[in-house]
Image 1 (cartoon, one colour):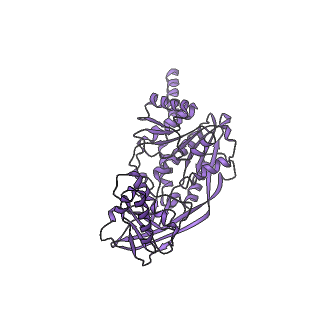
Image 2 (cartoon, one colour):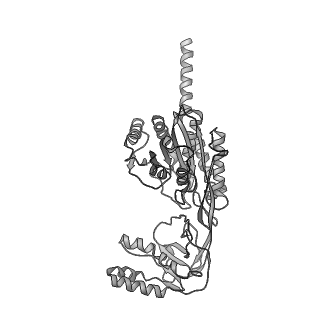
Image 3 (cartoon, helix red, strand yellow):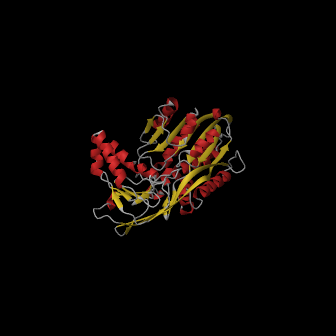
Length: 432
């Protein structure tokens, strides 16, 4: 009887440990749904979206017992941002949808429709102008004369030469030097409409429009942009930590929580980028709040990433402890897929840690593949890496590919791999 009771107790204890170490799917999904909800307005620059998202994360840190380097987990900084508050466009009698049918260049100034003539850019002559310096010079002179004091229409460009295509996308910048007070630029493109942010305001107001709406009988009925340059937008990195068994060394788990925000009634939810990475970081946070980590573990939720990796850059120039104490940093950005595995930026730089990650994955058969690449300054790990901090930027591969558009919602993510990604990360952190 004693043996049976003992066996039963051991079995229960084993199950309890397994449950404690398992992925908290409900918590992960709750964080993801909360950060992408309408109440946070795309975690951007209108309706206090970013600020309110930061308060939500701060409250979660507090609930889970994280310690703070300050009184409220905040590290406050400011930066300039050109906020596109609203934009409308009506073509051939149809009201276009922001983020789906058109976007505006993020540096655009406010503008309302003024009845000016329309100048249609000659794409055929433009392509031919690359045949010689003389033709290029002649085209630029003619274009400069014809476009003055007119609204400008840049038709879709039909060319297989990438360099010409890329140059064309920047052509509107040439008009910045002119009097643009009352005119707008309308550029039609076959490219995916990918919204972004700008820290500056230009003299040009540019609409970027799906080429589905370009016709021979094109008529632009109405348009306007409402924007505001805020030179001192205030944002907060949210930072908390859990004491480790060894507090001399520090492990950082990071993710950016900001996104593009809202333009008019169009919200950019940013589920994959990067509510998913924040949710993964916070699920690990919850686990380590219940299981003391080997090293002091700091959780950093950065703001301002979409505007230029600003929160992480501010942190490394105003660190809350010596950067030399950081054993390793893991930056999580785009955690909403996984059927194709994960990509590890800096995997080719920190070979020992990358091989460790691959070994863990092979042993447990978590994911299809652990891909590696070299250094890339494309997320919050970069400022740390540039200061000599060993770091990975890990992101999932696969999914529907919605990025910086209104379709990046929780419903469009494949979360069936989230537990495997979590287990891989947890096992890797344990072996650091």
